[in-house]
Length: 251
Ligand SMILES: NC(=O)c1ccc[n+]([C@@H]2O[C@H](COP(=O)([O-])OP(=O)(O)OC[C@H]3O[C@@H](n4cnc5c(N)ncnc54)[C@H](O)[C@@H]3O)[C@@H](O)[C@H]2O)c1
Image 1 (cartoon, rainbow, N blue to C red):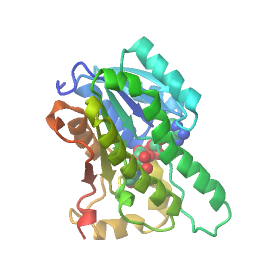
Image 2: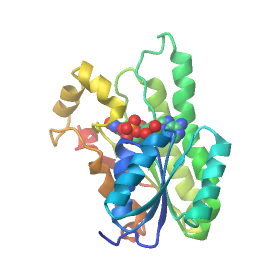
Image 3: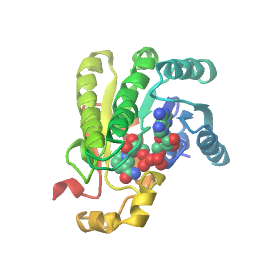
Image 4: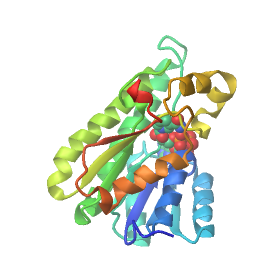
């Protein structure tokens, strides 16, 4: 066990799977007490069990980031069961790939904007008081699609560009309160989010061919940068976008 996050209370959304799970486990391994929150309550409790097995401390909870009352309830639960949050990771996200004229595009647009963009706003708002109290840290999970487009995902691209904009806006607004706000931009990371697409298309091969490090990422690749941005090691870093994409954006 490390000590980089000792004394911290960290909230990770979408922590019942993939990248959020890896970040929650990584934070607990560095000494943080972690709130593992996900709309998939079973996934969240599975993550909490893994953390316990590793000797860490966490609480799990159901959370729908699109529902402001659910976000407020989570903030109350964190305060009651762990104390005032000092780290928030806005990680929950969905993706659906289809052309803009496809049937169902309107619903996809609404759902993706609600979870990936408005959800980040909702959870951040719910935790502002404890984050101010603790000179906290916010880590938003963007994407290479915070900068570029990849196939048939207009809503996702807009939402992830928005996550980067929100990161910069809040870094400026909350900096005087001592809150740091940064974003991580994963490239292709092998998680359940893209499992079907990876299985049924040559998407992974195309991505790897365009990636200088010549591999796809694993969820654990995101944990280190997320620990860095939550810890005192990044004490003068705010408004930054940290690409974790094997160099994809350099080409
Ligand atoms: N996997 C990648 O290649 C990749 C690349 C770039 C960015 N990202 C981003 O990383 C984040 C995590 O994705 P992942 O790959 O780990 O996917 P994942 O599907 O494994 O995990 C996403 C989690 O978010 C949860 N979630 C979905 N809607 C929610 C809601 N309304 N409220 C609360 N939780 C909700 C899901 O239940 C799931 O557990 C997302 O924001 C995604 O956009 C992923």
